[in-house]
Image (cartoon, rainbow, N blue to C red; front, side):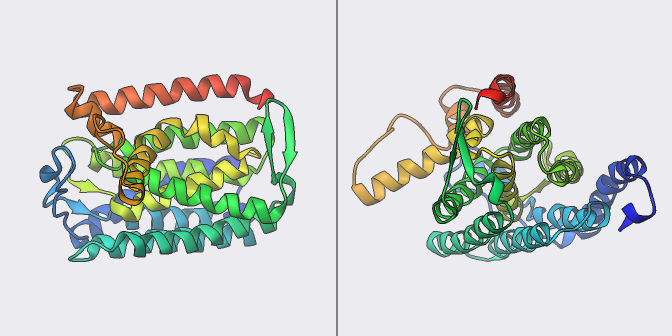
Length: 319
């Protein structure tokens, strides 16, 4: 570990420079070897994605894990998270590469297994954080119940972030706002310092990708990136000591991504038509029904999330 030889201040400086440069280099070297997108049949302007590089998530996730091992002290807990992040990324990447998209039930089962691994790891190593708070009143959760709820949380965020990945620069930008918000809560509560350091590294690895993903993009993260981002977001939500904060700090992501899942599930399984006048995910509704441009969707949704997050941080002592 570099921390054995260099002070933390200089490690941060080195990491801040090395991490994005490494990711940028790997995107340049391996970008042409990644699969190409076939376009999205039901998404607004989905046909414009055809031919673009897809699956860039494999590059920035691998860059993140490598830099995490290099710059952040390693623990058994986070070593397991890295394995699970890689597994989540790899499942998404194999789907990105497939000539025919994987069956949604197959992907759901894989997500469920990975979610169980993340939730179980958290429960084993964070007994002191197995609680939720309601405006200052903490409620201790039994480990078995927390494990089950944790699976739901991880699965929910994996799929919510995946659903937001429909506009150039949108998913990574919105996720970064939530990452910063969770990190602020962890710092305010003197929580896991390594989790904050890792979040900084993850955002740094996203910057070179966003450079390529800015409209008009030449590269997309694919399921390889979105699933890993959702998984990491769930880890942060639990690490902040009150997983209920996922509601305000991931409000826009959950609203944008989960309404569509709920709508499809109700129509498919209950045969009830709901939200017939609302196109899902909501960013497509904003573009098609409200006439917003892609840039307006990105900035306005990020602004909304930033306002909610700042208000939450101001009240955080009471959560």
